[in-house]
Each structure stands twice: as C-alpha cells, then as structure tokens.
Length: 204
Image 1 (cartoon, rainbow, N blue to C red):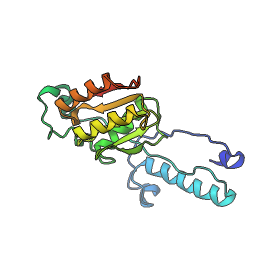
Image 2 (image 1 turned 120 degrees about the vertical axis):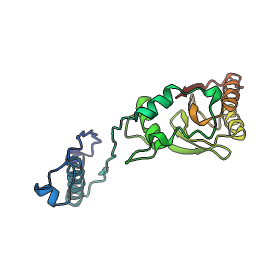
Image 3 (image 1 turned 90 degrees about the horizontal axis):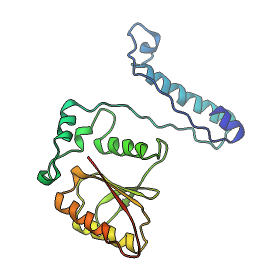
Image 4 (image 1 turned 180 degrees about the vertical axis):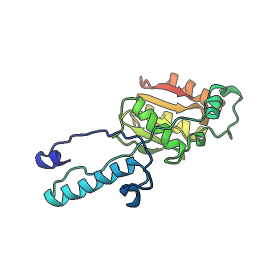
C-alpha cells in the first residue's frame, strides 16, 4: 500500500494466516484479540489509515476476507447421492454450505469465481431476469439460488437472442432447479437464434 501510494501503482497481494488461538496470558489477548488472523487484519487497517493520512493518495486501501472451510461429511454424502431426476424442489442444497463467516450462496459463488479464473478480487453484479436475480461477471451468468421460473428462462433466452445479454457461459447450480425446468433450459440453449452460442455448465 505504501508503494502504491508513492507511485500510483496497483499492486495486489494475498495474505494467509492460520486462525491460531491466542493464549489468555498474552498481551494481544488482553488487547481484545482472540486469534492471530485478527491481529493481521488490524495491522492492515491501521497501516491503511496511516498511509492515507500521510499521503492522501487515491488508492485502494481495502481488503477482502476469505475463509477456507471444509464441508461436513453429511454435506459431501448428500452431494454424492444427488439424483436430479428425483430431487424435490424444496430440498435446500445451498444452506448446507452456510458457515460462521458467510451464507451458502456466497460460499458457492466465491468458490466458482475463483475456479473459473476470475480470482478473488473481482465482484459479480446482480442481474435480474423476469423475477429471478442471477450473478453476472463479464460473459458468464451464474444461477445459484432457488426460484428460477419458466418466465425467467424465456426472458433469458430472448435477451441472449436479441443481444441484450451478451454471455458465452451459463453456470447453473443443478440442486436449485427442477429437472423439468433444467431440461427446458438445455433444449432452448441448443436452438438459439441469430447464431448465438452459450455453453451450459451444470454443477453439483
């Protein structure tokens, strides 16, 4: 941050810290910190405040916080045994990824964005179809939450065909869409007009 403030650069960095617990007899514990990563975040914030005050530079002083969380054994079993043809639409396969730091949908999206090469610093935008709100980043649209309807699918197809929505990939969380609606979506994407071509990626 100091170098960016000095030369207007756009350097980025990743810091990794195990959430090691702080012993109660340590000064950091008495200062209110409970794990080492909390100290790390506080140092970043204090450094940013100091550099901004001293330089007034127009740079990014913020940071994003990510946690690595291992899914529970039950979650892994549920995913492994998933069969879309017999899935009930009221099965909640999103909240199984809820944790102390984020909701399941946020965890899924962050994982996919990183997996798809967008990294940890880019942010998706909310994109509304008919009523459903998807997540859009560059030329990829993500459908994760439940609630996608036939009207939403038709709106999606129309916007792709008339070039209102310029995407090349549609990534869908199969657990959140009924089998019949998923089948309709597959069918419509195969016969897009105006030589449009959108790859459907189904994830479990």
